[in-house]
Image 1: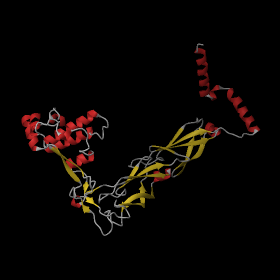
Image 2: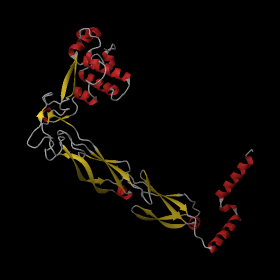
Image 3: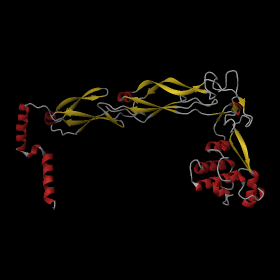
Image 4: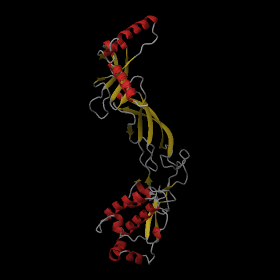
Length: 380
C-alpha cells in the first residue's frame, strides 16, 4: 500500500468532493495506465498508487478512517494486511481503460434493459477527383462496402422465432463486480462480453453478430475549394452498431489527380507558358488558359525566362469562403528545334551582331566577369 498522502497522489485538497476526486482520477489513470505505458514499471506503480488513493477516498468509511488515523487507520481496517489484495501485481482484474472509466464514470452507450450497445466503426473512403471538380465543386456517387443491420434478425443476432436471453451472470448489466479484499471493482462480464444478453440460437444470416456485409451507394456533395487531404464526414453512414448501438461515420478523404497544365498550392494555381525567343525579345500577346476560360497575357519586350505573371482572382476560392487565389503564369523561353540551313545562318548572323556590343546580354557579361575574377583570386 502506498505511503504517500492520498490527497497529494491525486493532487486534490482534503475537502475535495467526489466529483473532484473522479476528475483527478480519470486524468491520472489515463496518463499512467499500463495500456498507454507498456513495459514501464514506474508508470505501472504510479497507476496502482492513483487507483489505491481513489478507492480509499471515494469510500466514506475508509476516507473517514484515513482522515483520522492516516495509513494506519486503513491498515487497521484491513486487519493489518499491509499491501492489500486489491493492489497486487498485474491488471487483469481491472480491465482495460474503457472498463475502468465506464465503471467509474458511467461511460458508453446502453439501450433499454441495461444491455450495452456498441457504436459501429468509422469508415474511410478515398475519393480521387480532377482539379476542375475540386475547384468548381461537384456531386459524385460512391459505392461503399459496410456492415449493416441484419434484416433477417433485425440486428438481434438470434435465429428468427427466438429471442436473446438476459445474461444470468450479470443480470443484463454487461458488467460484474469483483471483490478483492477490502475493495471491489467492476469489469466486463466474461459470459456475455458486455452485451448483457446471451443468444441461444444464432441467426444463420449474420452468425449472431446482428450485422451483415453489404454495399451501399451514397451521394456525396463536394463543395468548391476542397483540397487533397480534406475530409467530408457523412454522419451515421459507417458500420452499423452492435446490440442496438449507433452507427459509425463515413469519412470521405479527398485526393486531387495531377493536371496536365496546372499545379495547385493552397488557393493559388501555377502553370508554365512557353514563348518564342522573338516574343520574349520584342514582346507580344498570347492566350493563357484558366479553369473558366482564356485570358490574354501581355508579354513586355525583353522578358526573361522564369518571369511570373499574376492574374488576380483566377485561382481557387477557399472552401470556407473569402477571396479566390491567383493564377501565376511562368514564362519559359523555348529554344527552336529542327532548324533549316537558312535559319541557322540567320541565327549565326544574329549572334555575330550581338557580340559587337555587350549591352545586349547584361546577365551573361556580369556572370563572365564574376568567373574571371574568381579564377584571378584563386590561389593554386
